[in-house]
Amino acid sequence: MIVMNQLVAGYDRHPVTRTISGVIERGSMTAIIGANGCGKSTLLKTLAGFIPPVSGSFRWQGKRPTIGWLAQRHALEAQFPLTVQDVVSMGCWPGVSLFAGFRRESRLRIASALERVGLETLAQSTIDELSGGQFQRMLFARVLVQQAPLVMLDEPFTGVDESTCSVLMDLMLEMYMQGQTLLAVLHDSERVARHFPQTLRLDGDIPHWKTDRVRVA
Image: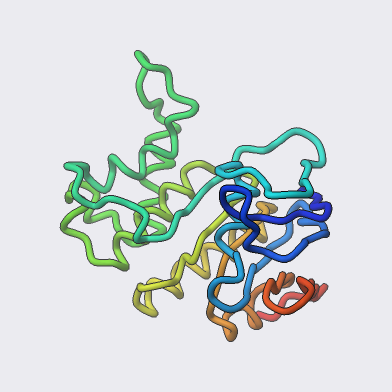
């Protein structure tokens, strides 16, 4: 799906990552790992198109897909007067007419996503009422609603309770088994070893790829 050729990610022409070459395959589930400061989130933002490469390049195998994006928790503002359902509904916006509003199919997707993350009873709560784990579940529900072929997650488990981590990991595995491509920045080495068939380690002299053909349950 994504072919990286001597890619270096960074900001304002200042490199952060080492030179990276390799392929993110369609239908794969890859964890980007490594020590703090090695450029994991920077690489993810580069592949998502938020920042340009410092050098080298990457290309899509075929047409660029729709990307489901889950940002780091601290990058989002919780003070807007929005409800949980409002935020989750944003996942449907690309396919919604300005005047027609949400179709029945979209409303069902929103309701299903809220139920799958365990927030159906909080749909009308404002987002400033949520705990950290509930807030992350809400953001993940928005990604579920998108049904994007490629999902990028920037530290989805950081700062949330273990119950939420387990729910989100189960949903990620479900998305992977359904054929979606997942690319996630992670710190939990045990969770990565247990669930992720492919890893890209960025620290060290040369970025290191590891692929397991059989996923450990």
